[in-house]
Length: 127
Image: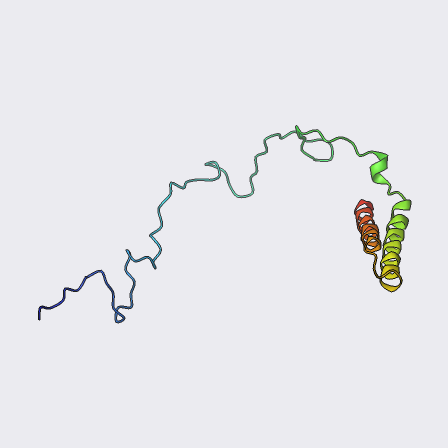
C-alpha cells in the first residue's frame, strides 16, 4: 500500500503552540503614526486658553450666549406636589375599586394607570 500524504498545514493534538497564520491567533498590531498631542515647548501645568480675557470674578468669557434664568424657572410652583400626590392616590383608589367591586371592567384599570402616569409626569415637573 502506498503511504498517505500528510498535509503540513494540518495540526495534530500534540502541537500546542498556535501559528501566526492560524485563525485562533490575533494578527500583529500595526504601528500608527502617533506623535505629540500637546504643542512642543509646553510644560506640565501650563495651560493656554483660546479666549484669555477674564472678568472681575476670574471667569473666562465665552462666545456662547446663555440667556438669563427667568423668575418662573427659579421658584417652584406650590400646587405641583399636591397634584402629584392627588393623582397617585386617585389612581391607587380607582385600581383598588376596580379589583374589589367592578371586576369585569377594564376601563377603570386604564383610568387608574393613567392617573398614576399623570402623577409620575407631574413628579418630573417638580423642582
